[in-house]
Image (cartoon, rainbow, N blue to C red):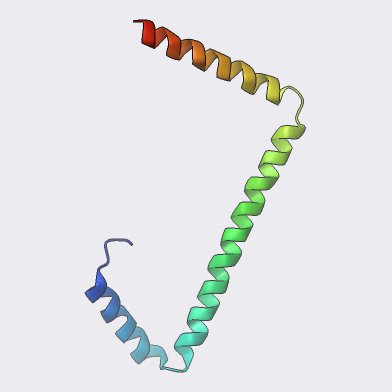
Length: 81
């Protein structure tokens, strides 16, 4: 996790406790957790939407199949060398 060990995390948490106080830390942690989960959900929605768009474009599936066949032939050529 960014090269931070246990001692560094303890110092960071101690400083955060001194700055924000004991009552605010759970609220900050809760807000941070909600923000991270919302970000992950948004990323997943974008990825799913991109897959749907690719499936809707005509010819994309055929091009993907041709690419797979070309890759197989390339790998076969490497094996035979």
